[in-house]
Length: 359
Image 1 (spheres, rainbow, N blue to C red):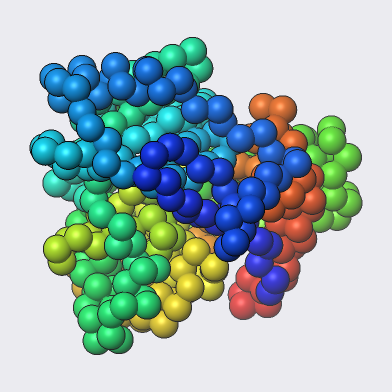
Image 2 (image 1 turned 180 degrees about the horizontal axis):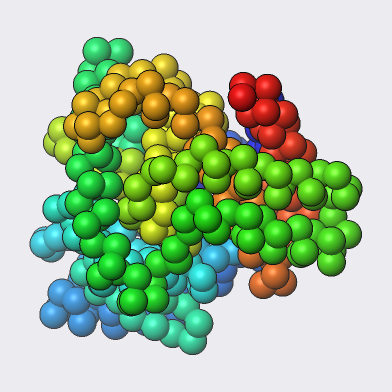
């Protein structure tokens, strides 16, 4: 099954200012289909830092971690400061949901999320000063750590996800009325897919059969996941969104994908073959075993459900692409959004065939 290329992080560094995405030789390569977010004026950042620290701060180093149309993320390092570094995020709607998630939903000791220290607004942009957990996400660990060490990390991650999903499953009645997280249960998959088909038809994207296959796929997934519990799911839980610091795992980049739904989608996302997971999937058996042991779930049942949860993860990615187009965004970091939509729809048709053959 061919997996369409998707957004990838493209870090660039500058000791004195900001940098744009570039090639290995440093040349800027703007994507003509994507309007990158224009960062707020520098004086606003200085004012926010003064408010946070209570004094003028000397920036010694800054690193651009991500620059896209809806987000701009930097690591800021300071002289004689505590904390000595911060993650500075600027986001546009709907990515601004991250502020509400950190302020009203996420409990760092349960969700293993970074702390939000301060937020501010300028026009449509939401700015956040956040805890810097360091540069070591799981992708970096794959290059620097031995296999035994990575296997231990996979085991710990399985346990932590089981604890998080269990804890938040008891809070669904409390969280739903807040109106921050969308709720998506298996009973909703069919109507969600029908709404996707309506948009695709309106925009004349994909052929009729593949559009109808989306509804068939949603119904197939719903039947397989109907008995699963509902809890908080990260929704975009690839290895690049997991940071390891001092033997503790943290989940970063909580965003539009977070929801109250079937939490098995997180296990499917982190264990699927995908560029954002790289070789971490070699240890998926260890992660699944640890998750099942901690959660008390049947390993056989989980393994049978995972292909359906993986298809759900990809269906939700298509939903995000359609959301982008609905907002008038015609580009992605890998080209026109229409092209990527077409490829993902074809991929989902293949997944339907695969799931049908398994039953």
